[in-house]
Length: 200
Ligand SMILES: [Zn+2]
View 1 (cartoon, rainbow, N blue to C red):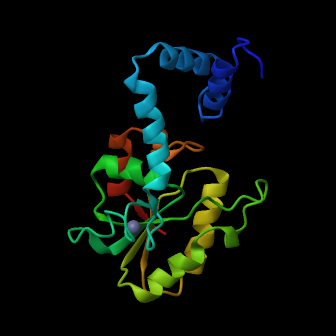
View 2 (view 1 turned 180 degrees about the vertical axis):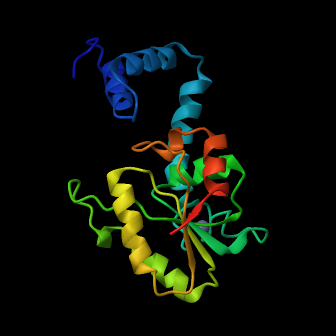
View 3 (view 1 turned 180 degrees about the horizontal axis):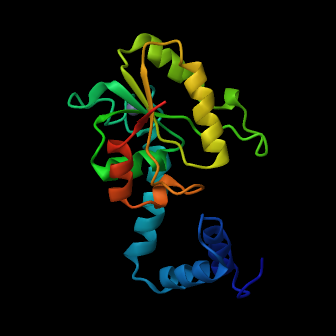
């Protein structure tokens, strides 16, 4: 789309507009900031963007972001290996880690069941979760999905899936407003929701 008529600048504005939460005006402001910044910044920025994909992958166990076969949480001997916190996305791991109230492992589903968005149970990493329940010494599964209709439906689906296993099933407590994403909730509220988690 032509904005300024200067191809390189328009190109940058259009690319920045694709980022979540970035509207056209913010993209223009960022593009002009990059344009006017000192020589090293655009290079460092583009290098950081390139490296984030080249030097990371998904943890083979929990599907969190990792540099090696296992993420730093799975590889950490101080973490409680008897607990798994099930989240929708990598940003939710970051949000819960920020609360400092959880010391177990994670399992990143990669979404929630959403017929409208064409996401079925088979599209999520549910089989991998069941496999982990069968092979690891799991005592508690804490469901920490966003409190949307889809998140609620997915939590019910998972609780049915794991019902016959000898594992305590919990969900983060209310206090997380309906329809809100964990990543936008302050860490103290998340911490409270984990501490006051409820049995399913
Ligand atoms: Zn991991």
